[in-house]
Amino acid sequence: MANLIEIKTSETFIVDLMYSGTANMLKTNVYGRVGLGNRCFVQSDLYQNLQKLIPVLQSRGLRLKIRDAYRPPLAHNMMLEIIPMPGFFARKPELSQHCHASAIDVILTDDKGQELDFPCAVDAYSPFYADEISAGRWDDFRHHLEKAKYTWNDPAAARAVANRDMLRRLMEQAGFTALEHEWWHFNLPDKEKYPLIDFSLWNGQPVFTER
Ligand SMILES: [Zn+2]
Image 1 (tube, rainbow, N blue to C red):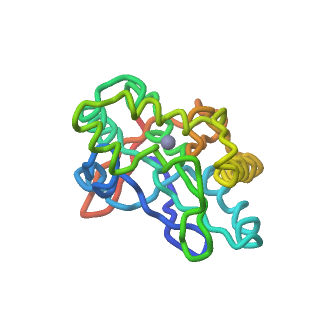
Image 2: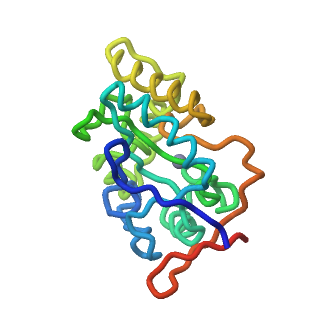
């Protein structure tokens, strides 16, 4: 058994998991299919880091929208079936910290829940690119993915770049590690501490098992 902690929508956090609906680049509700739905579970170390953010975000009138957290390995395998091309998802669940509940995908919003400007959407998804991907047109999307990197800069998007860099600062101060090619993704350091975690439902209740 693994003890994960659930984060619920509150004054500071908004739980809106992108794979618990169809508005994602897979156009598939994979978390619904595996029974997780829009429920956000994390390692207790990750939960503790998020607690440190609460006063900082509140003092700035900001909230943190969580777009992905713990991902059941079964859901990850479904994602690999839908998009088998390399470079989009980790090659197997073991390699994704989401499947270890030690990673989180986030974006800042204002106090009303309106997303601040960022260089691209979380996961670089937009309906336009979902259609492109469905049609097998990858080149545009790969180019668009440049906006996911911290190296991306554009004087015309100064506010988006500043928000991106502010998010990184806040998350690093709270103990997270950033990923250079995905501004929305943050890991717990020392990933070997966290085993792969399987998910099942028992009488409708989530059960987490360390593999
Ligand atoms: Zn992620």
